[in-house]
Amino acid sequence: MRQKIVAGNWKMNTTIEEGMALAQSLLERSSEIPQRVTMVVAPPFTHLYAVNQQIRESKIKLGAQNCATHENGAYTGEVSAQMISSVGCQYVIIGHSERREYYGEEATILNKKIKQALSSGLIPIFCVGERLEQRESDHHFDVVETQLKEVVTILNPSDFSKVVIAYEPVWAIGTGKTATSEQAQEMHAFIRKVLAQHFGTLSAQTPILYGGSCKPSNATELFAQPDIDGGLIGGASLQAEDFLAIAKSFPLT
Ligand code: PGA
Image (tube, rainbow, N blue to C red):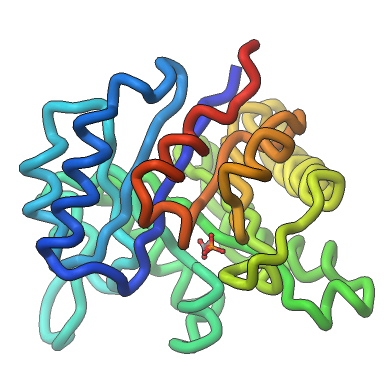
């Protein structure tokens, strides 16, 4: 049975007070998180230490939204994987489409980041996904396959076994437009097939999350699909009520 995960990507939202209040609301209701579901919150860097103090004794896990390509040194403004790990994070999001699009993060950079994350003991949540014009021109499978092959399939099997994948069609992120459960399942099955070509049966254990306007009203249908193992949630993770509802949207068996 694959791990079920809901990860909240807060992006560049919340002041420290707001972020701590959100974490507190999740904490107070953490008994509602189903036993077999792992809940991860990924606040901004500035909030990680404080949020870790709040949730460290609970079942909620901490993640960061990015990490540096280097281990340490003269890289003004960067935050290393080791620093992230040292404030209590277990996860780090790598290759989010906003990082790819606005900060020019391409394969060379993402390879370095994933290696830094793994060598600091962090679990990378590696994001892939096509843009609208790529889907409309029927290139979505090629795009996602390339994104996987540039970074994930070149890992050794032991490193690969730690990785979580998030499929996030760019056209669905923050737009209110969700992929249908059929579109998402089709891509998730494709991703697992590509991973299986490289890693064989190991890929059966890889959690593949869906992201892009996932909310309480569509999570149940998405999470019922056989290859969808949870969600990477943006907007809806900023409301404790909604995020908890999403965490409770997995099928019972
Ligand atoms: P969204 O963002 O849920 O607000 O669409 C998802 C993401 O970017 O991870």
